[in-house]
Every structure is written in structure tokens, then in C-alpha cells.
Image 1 (cartoon, rainbow, N blue to C red):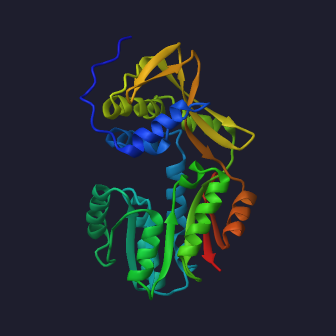
Image 2: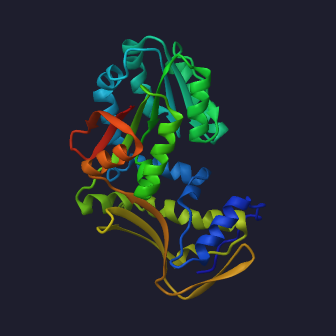
Image 3: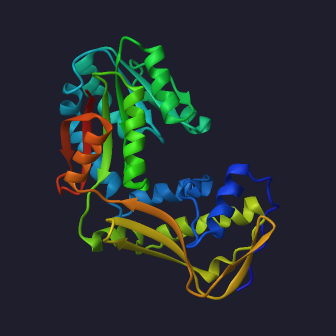
Length: 323
């Protein structure tokens, strides 16, 4: 099938072109999952979260709704600033605010994201739903956001949130290093609430990453559409297939785009060869056992305060205190 006509190529960011070319020249080939979320990818991910097979969003929403009072009560009944790392649209955290205000009285909100537009929308929605909780959005990376919250609200305990299964996108060593970095940016007594997708039936996991409606497939293939648009590439989407499986050696779901034929693709002014049935890795999502979470926290210098599960025991929101 012929490739569709492409929009005029935009000037690519050095970060995008460098990471794409480095990944495609490698063995095995990889593409950076951080670039899933252009405008189309973000809309597709919202659809994924509503799919019956994709349990993560519903499981965590259940945890935050059912355990909000326990989470708030474990924060020390002191003035608090909630630092939401990668806040998204903020819907998850809204259920926490009433419980936090009841437990701590003086509560502030600092959502942190690299996307100023997303933060502007979140801030508007927050002021509509929680007008008594002041909101101070912060555009930047997570460590900068944590440090800014400490500087601006020095008398407040920080409750940092890293929700969803975002930590699973990092290899365990990198996840441990990230938590250790955040621990150094926090003060003794601060709290950190982290979401962990737990290891479960491989059939449940496979369905969540390869749904019957084909939304996850479209989400994965959108990486190629984005490269066609922004890098002037000429990927033929019909000659790539989405594939997802569980690697039992490292307890990680892996997503791939598989070339269905021998082909050459022009990317960034360079021709990249793909063999028939060659797989390009696009995402890794590590799944955890409770013992893995304990070891991760211990290595980062964090003390467990509360373990909060959904009713099926598929997801864990772990609350830690900086010792």
C-alpha cells in the first residue's frame, strides 16, 4: 500500500531527531516512548484509559477514592503542599483534596508538568472544583518542581505524587535512582505516594496492551505518523504491526512495531533498513511484586507508611515518608 501524502515536515527538535536516529541505528532497534504523547497520542491514551481491558486508571481511581482519608491522615495533620509530578488533567488528585483539607487544614496544590497548556487547563479546572485550595502550577521537570515547592512553601509538609504506572516505564535501577534523587530533594517528614502496577495473570496484561478495539495499536503506530510529519520520514504504516508480550525474565510488558517485509525507510535524511519481521521496541512497562517495592524504597532511603490496594489487588499506591 502506498504511503499517504504527508504534511510538510516541521523543523524537528534536536532531542527528537537525535533520540530517534540513535534508537533506529541500534541493535535491536528502539523508539523513545516519551514521544507517544503528541496531540493525537494524548487523545488516544485518553481512549485507552476508558477501555474495559485497561484496568490501571480504574484501579487507581478506586484506591484514591476509597483510601483518601487514610492517605490524608498519614500526612501528619500539618500544613501541606501537594506536589503532583506529571499532573496530566488532574482528575485523579481531585478526590484527595477534601480529605487532605479535613486532615491538614492548610493545603496548597502545585501541579508539575513540562506542558504549559496542560497545566493551564488543569489550573482552571482545579479553581472551579476546589476554590478554597490555592493552586500554583509549575512548568518544568519533576526535581525542579519539588525544589520549588520547598522554597515557596517552606512551612508546609510536601506530599509528592507519582501516580499511574509511570515508574514502570523505567528499568528497576533507573527507578531506584529516580526515587533516590527525589528523596534528596525532599526533607525529613515529607511524603511520597507512588503507583505500582503489580505482576498478574499474563492474559490480563496482554489484553491491556493489545485491546480488542485496536486503540493501543493505533497509539503505537502514531509514533510512525509523528515521525512522518515532524521528521519528513516515509514510514508506510500498513507495513508495520503492533505486538505486545510479557517478558517473564524481567516481569515487564514490552510493546513493539514489527516490520512485515524487507524495506528501506527514509528518516531524518538517512535510509534505515528493516528486515521482514524485525521488531522495533517502543515501550517497556515493568510490573512489580510487593517485595520489589520494599527493596526499591529501602534503597532510596524511604520508609513505607501505607500500602493501598484496589479491590482485586492488581495495583498498589504506596505511601512513603522521608526518614
